[in-house]
Amino acid sequence: MNELLLERIFDKVENIPPFPETAQKALTILRKEEVDFRELERVVKSDPGIAANFLRLVNSPAFMLPQKVDSLFKAFMYLGVNQIKFILLASVAGVYFNKDLKGYGISAQDIWIHSLACGVLGEILGNLLNLSYEKIESLYIGCLLHDIGKIVLNLYTTIEKEKFQEVIKKEPTWDFNQVEWLVLGVDHGLVGGYLFKKWGFPEEISTAIRAHHDPDLMLQSRLSALVALSNILANMIGFEGGVDCFYYKVPENLIDYLGLDFKDWTEPLREAYKKVFYLHRSLF
Ligand SMILES: [Fe+2]
Ligand SMILES: [Fe+2]
Image (tube, rainbow, N blue to C red; front, side, top):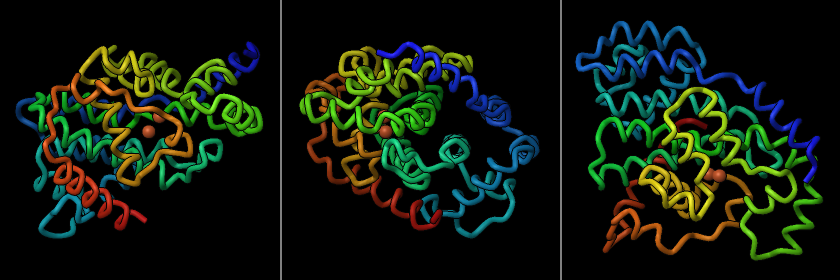
């Protein structure tokens, strides 16, 4: 492991823009019993990037609004609090995933769509498990931003491409995060978790992001297991998160740990696919 490289990676972490204050403020408003939509509109509007993404997303047929809306306030009137939170956090993800990640072989569009797919699946699984409002919010954050560490590591996976290929050839049974550890001394889950810890998010969220490729750690909490499973399913239904997604094993006991007993996976997966398909079509 190259210590200088690791130092550079953590220097780069410092350059990642902080989690938007606008989103923090909006979430605080949305956690209140009585939500003031005018105040919420004022707050969301203060960040043009998030506001623009919000309007792009909300007008997708995925959210089934009865008519197109051109104002945030109108959009809020049609949506439930959970949906507003989802679209808000999906908009934040769009702000972060705005560049191609060459080191992971994925475009800006596709990594955003992968994150949205993970969020949609997380929501479906969370509802099946009757999660509370609070837990659903944590699940949205974890799912929609689970790959944020890739933004930091992208430069180094690009520079070290040959080394990555060498290790993958030599150790074909390794998961990709093991390869990241060997070449870079860190993996994108850990970097993402570190970012969320630094931003002051609850430990449960930073751990879920940290754990999404760690077969042991993902079984330490329901949130971690749900984020990990949503990511796996997003890849399975065709919204892959990068070339690395073909290099992970699925822990056998993940479904059992969650107590999910899908006699038929078809319906939830079809529902998710349809929603993400609409999102993809309306966004790009
Ligand atoms: Fe990942
Ligand atoms: Fe992913």
